[in-house]
Amino acid sequence: MITLTRSRPAQGILEALNTRWHRAALLAYTVVVLAHWAEHIAQAIQVYLLDWPVPTANGALGMALPWLVRSEWLHYGYAVSMMVAFIVLRHGFTGRSRRWWNAAMWIQIWHHFEHLLLLVQALTGEYLLGAAKPTSIVQLVIPRVELHLFYNTIVFIPMVVAMVLHLRPKPDELEEMRCSCASPRTRQVAAVGV
Amino acid sequence: MNPDVAAAGPHDHLVTFSVTTGSFWLRVLLVAGALTVAAFGQLRPFFAEQSRATVLSVTVAAAGAGLVQLLLADGLDVPSQAAVPLLAGLVLPIVAIRARVPRLAAHARWIAPWVLVSAAAAGTEFASAWLGSDAQDRALHTGLVIALVGLSWLTLCRTRSRFATVSVGTVGWLLGAAVVAATGQAALLASAVGR
Image 1 (cartoon, each protein chain N blue to C red):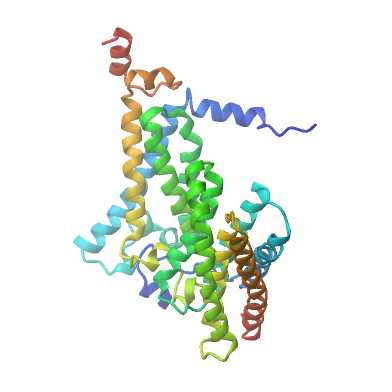
Image 2 (image 1 turned 60 degrees about the vertical axis):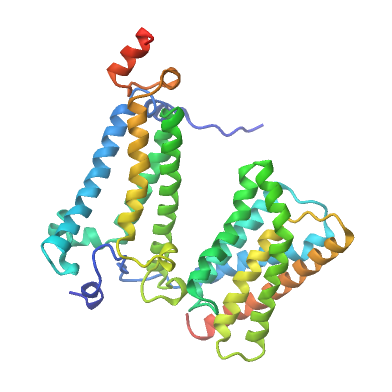
């Protein structure tokens, strides 16, 4: 009989990412997410505070490399990377933080699906319901003003809540944790049993 | 600067490919998905209860075909916002089957025959398309999406009375037949206009 199991190296990396490397992985992930936010905030400042014409407001990196902002592949790549990180790193979370992380993960899975739909439209030249440009499903109901920012916000908030709760777990949650993410003070309190 | 780029804002998801793949593969997916769902609708009255895998495959095929319909359609006979509840109608059966929550499944089964019967409204769209409507393409795609929603929910139907069993089977069979005809016509119309 043939059984399908995850190969050992992959299993080992997944295990490490959710245990001894969990803290480092979450830190790296947060840096990437904040850098993405910084680009969007830079764009918003260029448009709303500096009154730059919208087509030229490309954020910080986009000023040097405009194709970065306009590449559908880049947008899609970022959405996929975020989704994969949410899925891979979820095992390290326990209790309340796991619930918040799962909520962020499912919102990101939907966000990724919307990006995939946009990518398919860009690839085939067939736009949703005959629209003039690639259109996402939510755009049918909510006009695109800054829909992408909205999506990032509703993913970011539960993600931050999950991380904060993960750093400050309750004693029962701390017992289940196999990573070193809990703050030293939380560990101290749990050890004393206060 | 490219005029399209100049007209759009950052993050406006412009077409950034110099060459596109065209829509042929979408039409192939549409025909494959819609025919799978139609076959289920037509064969269901003659078979015993289907496995979870079969039911899941059919609902996924219906959702995929419904989404491709919306990509290939120039518009619907209903406001474009109606596409959102229609898509939700295609996704909910998948959720109900995958969730393995008995209460959710029971609710879904209770609603299923009513959704199926409501989807018979697709008949008016098909009639409009086949009896010389000016917006034949829109009517066809609208009818197809509604029919796919109905056939997707057909997978969840569990009837008790003989009347309900015959009614559900008949509506499912008719919707399946209409989907086969409409899918073929929609694919041919798209080819005829060189898409």
